[in-house]
Length: 112
Length: 213
Length: 87
Image (cartoon, rainbow over all chains, first blue to last red; front, side, top):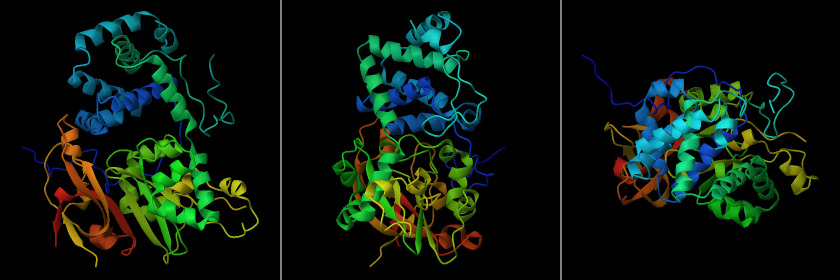
C-alpha cells in the first residue's frame, strides 16, 4: 500500500533542496529552435502554454532529473501537437528515422 | 567548426560558456525537433522563415532592455509611476516588443527588497529580459526561494538587513515580474545611459543589487 | 480595507496553478488583475472560461509558522478566484 498527500512533483515551493547551482550555458541552436517552435505553435493556437506545462508535469519527476530543459520541452510540444492532430505518430517516427539516417551529428542531420 | 569547450575565458555575449552544438552526436530529442519542424513546415502549419525570425527576435531580447527601462524610471518620476502602474505599456512605450506579456514592476526601496521566482515551472519576463539563467529553472532555486529566500540571497552574495522587508513574488499564473532596483547612491551626475550600465540582470530578478559606479 | 482570503485546501490531480505550499493559508488581496482564461481548462484543450485572478499576499509567518526566516517578510502569488474562500 502507498498513499500520497496530493502534492505533485513539479509543485516544489518550500521543499528541501541544496545550494543553487550557479553555472550556466549558452543556448544551442537546436534549443533555440525548440523555444521558437513553442512560441509559434502557441501563437497559431496549436498548443497552449498550459498544455505544454500539463504534459511536462505528467512526464513525472524522473524526466525532470534525467533530461534537459529543452529535451523535455520538445517531448511536451510533440505530445500536444499529436493531441491536436497536426500529424500522426507514424509520420513522426518515419521522419525521425529519415533524419537519423542523414548523419551522426545535429548539423548533418539537419541538412535534409 | 568545433568550439573550444575548455577555454573558460571564452564566454558568449550572454556571459555563459559556449556549449557544444552541431558537432556533438545527434540525440533522440534533437532528431525529434528536426522531424517535427520539417513536418510542420511541409504541412504548411509554420514557415521556416517564421522560425528563423522568432529565434532572431528572442536573441535580440536581453537584460539591457530591462536596464534601459529601469534607468529611465530612475531619472523620470512620471515614467516610474507609469511603470509601477502598468509595466507592459511602459515597456512598449520605450519601443520594446514584449509580445502579449503582462508585466508587473515591483520597486525596491530603503526598507523593501523584492525577489522573483516561479515555483511551479520557470515563468520569467523573457519577452523583455531574454531567456532566464539556468539557475532560475533549478529545483534548488524554485524550492528554496519561497521558504528560505534570505539564505538564497546570501548564496548570491546579498546579505539583507533584518530591518529590510523581503517580498517574494511567485509567478504562479499570468503575470511576469521585474524588480525595479533602488538607484545607487552617488549617481547624481550619471546620464540615463550610464545608469543603465549599472543595472544587472540579477538586480532585476532580485538576487543582486545594481553595480556601484 | 484589506480583503482576507484563504486558498482552498483541496488536492485534485492534474494541472492547477495554486501552489501546494499555499493551500489552506490565509492572505490579503494585494490587487485585482482582471479576468484570465482558466488554465485548468486550457491545459486539456478545452474552451476556457474567464476567471478573476488576484495577487494575494501572505506573511512568511502564516506560510511557514515557526520555521519562517523572518515572519514579517511576505510572499505574493497569483491565485484564481475559484481557488479562494473569503474569510
